[in-house]
Image 1 (cartoon, rainbow, N blue to C red):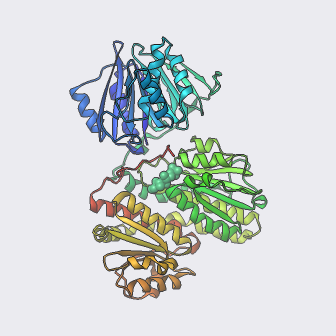
Image 2 (cartoon, helix red, strand yellow):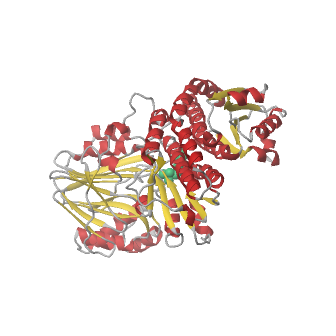
Image 3 (cartoon, rainbow, N blue to C red):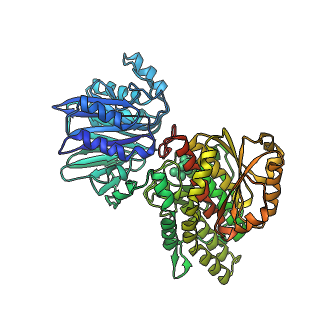
Length: 605
Ligand code: F6R
């Protein structure tokens, strides 16, 4: 989603801004722009499409100046055009914005009545117009920002730049993340620590409702009530090498390949002397009567897998909701409910809103996140980091498997505490999990098969995924991954559900991908597979050696996976789901790391 950067530097700002925007590319965007102040004069350059277009423009029309702001835009209001690209300007003020100003129409009418008319279709331009209206009244930049913010409804991370003042940025946050970076006689603002990483390792995350007045040598932060606020300066250690493809063709390929290592890291973080140790005071699952899990997209499929684990291992009932539906459903939350929120970015607006709905209604709010400084983490009672490392590819891969690893460890701890798992049974399960990173490494060996099969999948218009039990959410994840990056229509069904309608879709042009390790439900899945083949369906069976033997002939193709404890199979079967999507996208020639229309961190509802 939109990326923001601001610089009050000692050197030319434009190259620093463009480099910082490049590090924010992973969030997804469709246009970009920067504005600087030179000799007191404000000017801007904007371009549609990739950042290279903005860089090209800057070669022909350079933008001098040591102070500036920049933005990558993921269109919400108005098409991705140069006019709609940020920074937005009105008179002597320029703004960049991430979020949605919900009352912009009302404000726009009010401003039009004063003769301040919009030139763009965006909600953000209204902020610039509003700020200008206050400037016209002779207010100082600080008062202008304060008055403007007081009128805004919705979500924002905003940075203001004022003509005539090249030592001032005003930054504000409500609903969308923003961080201030400290340099030597320099200051920076950015959507996240990745944007700021090479410039500084000292940053402050703004809190909800904060406004920061930033100069090269001072940062003054006030909270939502206008009181001076003392926010901690954190020393961040971002390995900028992680923002490098390290020889891989795409970030997604790198992140798929990293899974054996990061899964071992996740495991190591949660095991102490062979026992599962949750951070802080941990959790007492004997007091929990129900878990309410909430997430979006891939993270929600991790929750669906975890539902099987919590119910089967710990005897705990679990509800799973997609975050965008949760709070509007107004679910009653009974005593003893644990709210469990899963999010890679920790900034997903829907998930954050659901978490806030639960605050005070559930006994405890626990989050499973990849970014421990994120909003979701900061608003939780207990944070369980997944330790996946920075994930850049828009299609989530290693974060999914690390979410699964974290959740299965929590489910095992719950099962043990609640007396559903003996010491020996727990030790045996932990031993199985220790073998998982090695199995994932082994499973990556199926890549050549996936690439071969993907060439045929790339010809399909529709693809079905089937799975039963713990593999059903994996089928959902396989279909989502494929849709996201190859743009092929894919659907997933619980294997047993196919005959209740979707089987009408089956013909020889629709590949049906069946994800089925040889487990207690395998024979039933084989029957469903036979029903597909009897109707001319083209089945790709993903199973293990035993499954391949039992299933017999007649499938279109097979991928044979290493043998794994059926309980933990979802962690392993994520690999073919990812590799098939990746290679299908390669075969189709799509933009794997930044697929069309998608954003990495979805900070609007
Ligand atoms: C799919 C994908 C998305 C995210 C979803 C939630 O590959 O990445 O479906 O899983 O937008 O994002 P987070 O986990 O950051 O809350």
